[in-house]
Length: 196
Image (cartoon, rainbow, N blue to C red; front, top):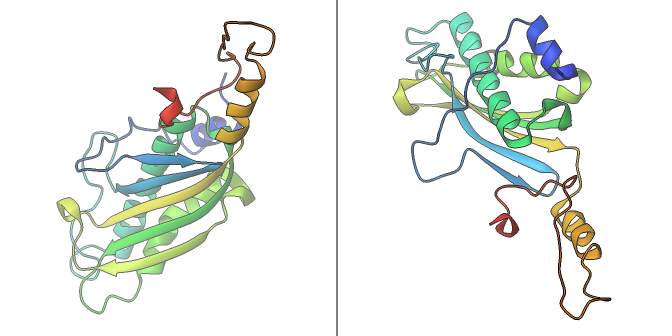
């Protein structure tokens, strides 16, 4: 059954792509406490092609840049869904960071990054309103026009509470041979050292 956010994406005509795998020595996201930190996402479409290539102010128009930033945000959402399984678990989009491939002197990076910011608000409503940084850069991987990264807060027990809950379920007190079982209703973050 589709959640509220999934329904909103469908209304907007958005189908989330398969998350893109890292191309270097990093992970696509890190879950720490109740926060998800998503690595930089390029402006790739569902087929893995760049939505816009080159520099803003040097061949790429502002409208093309806005579409590129929107594509970055869609890829951020795909990573969040891969991490959490359900975008309704997002309590707040905390921060977006945008990198705009810019010709020298190009002043409109913030206008371009609105493509990502507007999508977050359209998808999450007030929970999508966020702090933001936009930086013009001389180059991006693959000569992409834009890249975006994100920090989001999610609903769910922090790891410490999950571990405490599991320890309370251990039968060490009444059994000479302690045994513990991980409760099915609790989800261990896959990137936790306790998950291996």
